[in-house]
Length: 243
Ligand SMILES: [Fe+2]
Image 1 (cartoon, rainbow, N blue to C red):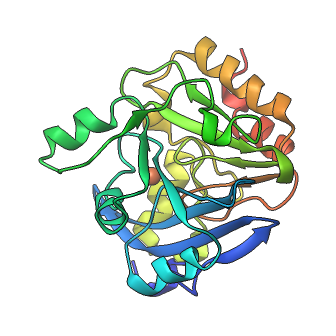
Image 2 (image 1 turned 180 degrees about the horizontal axis):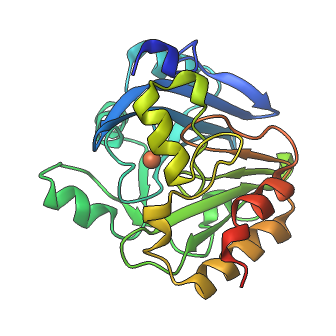
């Protein structure tokens, strides 16, 4: 893929709601495809900064985020989104690392030295309880993903449960691949190979809970995210779950 495959400016916090920023990162290679990456940053009511799925580390980015508040929490939301967390946690020894179940094991398997201070559960921990709701989406022993809902701004944060690659940003062969995989804009969804990993009933229950949160915006880690109409996008993206 080319630099046009990303969402510039890169490695720069971009405000999307009060106390919520996205940071678009460079592409990372995964299997035979290069993916644009996106981090979400939230400033909690305490003033602490919470970073979800950190993108490539850079000093200027660290400074830009710290200017909004001290970074206290680093979140690795699923088993394939931890690659850059170690760099951030090395730079921020005082920040706590929160990982989805399975992340620590996966990192160890891959020989990545990752500090995990806490494993995420269905219950939001004290630092963001009442402010950011969370679920570890059930239904798969392989792909487990923690999803988050920032109540004050009605923002849902997904990682890979919906991917939405824009065809105009893709070389032709990846355009074809993503169309077949079901993760191409405007029909972004869970890639078909990932769907096979899930028990549909369990996943459907989690999607209902996300819909009940009533999100307005849905931030995704890959591709075009949804600034409005979050509930409708969830219903559309997970329509394949309906019997
Ligand atoms: Fe991903």
